[in-house]
Length: 173
Ligand code: SF4
Ligand code: SF4
Figure (cartoon, rainbow, N blue to C red):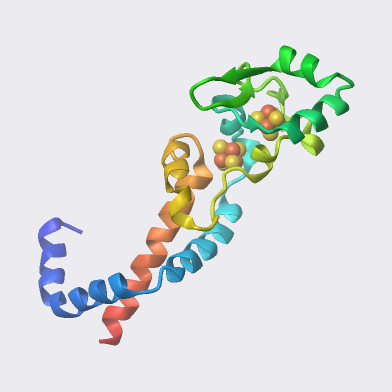
């Protein structure tokens, strides 16, 4: 639709549209969480992580002490030996990360994780699509959206759902 046609439509529906935006501003933020949760279900119907693995190729998880103990035990290494071989300490962020990207534990032929059962909790929860309070995760989504198709899909579908909501609201008035 051309911008002029869009503007015409807006002018025609200006009053209800403005009222809707006002309602949206006054609305409880849980509405947004519900929309995102619905969109998340749709995301996993259209995104296949085994065809992507960008998070393992372009990003690094952060590892907590419990991750290091679990993975070191699995690899039959001591925690100091595991850290020396695979991890680096990021001084600015004060956290432990993988030394290399793509991650050394990624099987690049299959996109599968070679330590899947004991992988870091950060990998287990990624891409942290709908976590509450939702505002605390916006900066993470902003970082992830350029690599993670699931994150992009979440925002596209959420926007579409909000748009559908707007349309049905306009139609009811
Ligand atoms: S540990 Fe496994 S899931 Fe985590 S980044 Fe490495 S390959 Fe990916
Ligand atoms: S970047 Fe996102 S879509 Fe790709 S494998 Fe990781 S979580 Fe899945």
